[in-house]
Length: 149
Image 1 (tube, one colour):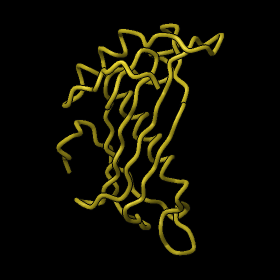
Image 2 (tube, rainbow, N blue to C red):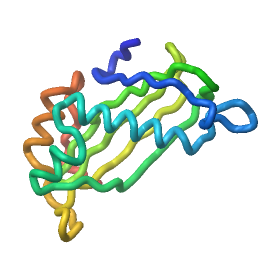
Image 3 (tube, rainbow, N blue to C red):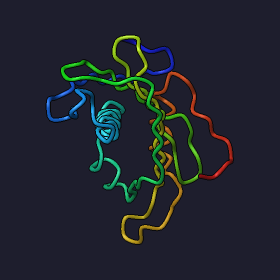
């Protein structure tokens, strides 16, 4: 189901191994769902990670993850993982991610990644090819304020 702020949606099914004794998705698995969504997002914009990014002399490192739980997914639910780039900075960018079961918001959160030189692992400017791919793809223009994260 299309979500108004998100152009990219990837649907996954909750597996038995992901639920806990209460019959709901164990909280740590939501970060895995975020990661699946981000991986598929890169593929969708023509930048499959790591090949398309590392081959250009860049690499991406997770800096921050935030999750807010609104409701629980359960075994065999179909969950829509909605992903968008919400902010682009000098060396970093932020994914906004929301998980839905139908129209019900289950989880929301963000992931911040920093671009770094793959050899030194020191922060480096976010490559134009990646910023351009984000801008071209997104339905809502990412915030490009000067705040550094």
